Length: 114
Length: 115
Image (cartoon, rainbow over all chains, first blue to last red):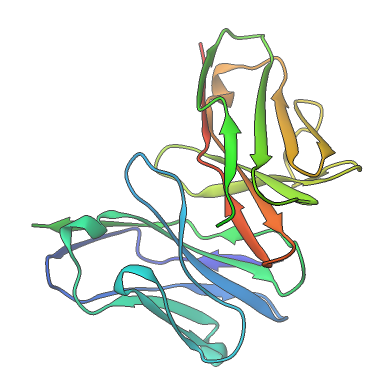
C-alpha cells in the first residue's frame, strides 16, 4: 500500500529564511506527486505536481519541489519565505493511473515569524 | 479552472440524526469522486471512492452503512452520515477527478458538528 511520510510536524522560520520540507513516499510503481497548501480557514490548494519529465517542478508562489526517485523523496523548497506562507503543507501521492485516489501525508505546519 | 463545490459549508445537528453533504463538479464531469475527513490539526484521511453509477469503494475501517455514498450523476456525489454521533464531528472534504485535464480538484469542505 502507498504511504507518505512528512517528518517535520511543525516548522518555525523567520521571514526571508529558506525553506525545505521533507516528503518521502512508499510505493513500488510509478506515482504522481503533489504538494498542497491549506491556509488558515481555507480549503486545499494545489501548489505543484509532478507527473513525469523534469524532476525539478516549479509551482505557484515561488515554491518548487524536486523528485528524487532513488530516494523516494519529493521535498518542497522556497528560497525566501514570507509571513503569508504560514499554512499547513501536505505532500500527497497517487498511482500513475487515471482517477486513482490521493494519499496524503500527515502535514507540516509552517509558522513564519514576521 | 475546474471548480468543485460542497453544500452545506457548515452543519450542526443533534446526535442520532442523519446529515447529507453534497459534492458537485461545476464545470466538468466527474466519473470518480473521493470523500475525505480531516480532524483538527490532522491530515486528510480518505474515506471512500465514489464511482458514478456503481457502488462506492470504502477504505479499511470506514463503515459503509454509516457513511452512505451516492454518485447518481456525473456532477454530483452525496455523503450521508447516518445516525450521527459527536465523534463524527469533523471536516469532510470531497475531490473530483477531471478526466479531460487528468487532475483532481478539491471542494472547500463541510464542517459537521454533532451535538
